[in-house]
Image: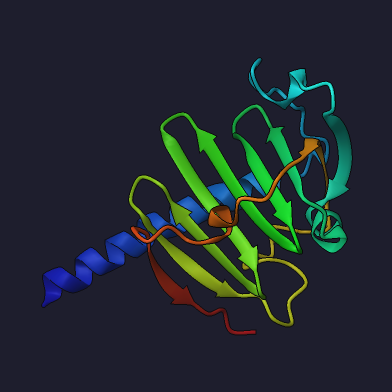
Length: 166
């Protein structure tokens, strides 16, 4: 019994560390993330536009946008559609994903296939006070045809509901 509890606590610790990595990516206080996307990324797409905006700005428009970003340490892609967000990030051998939709945030580590669910109702930012959805970042974006599968948590990911007392 004690072993199961310790394994559960260790697994939760790994998930929280993965969540902190995603939060650190989005809470970079430099406010101007330098876009160092790969040569085959959106930087070479003639229709791509570099935009300084907040995540909430993209969510509010409801437009279908695929955006790349990099801060030199983390890089990834964000997909916006109909007031929803999917973010995938990578850093060396780490990778994770996040979905925000219907007042909930789902965040998971792609290696361990474990993560957390946060209820965002009534909150202006995500589950961490360090991450602001209102801060401006630099994105390179194109319009895209929505793939609804990106806004669904993969079936092989195990999520735990996490509530923060306010």
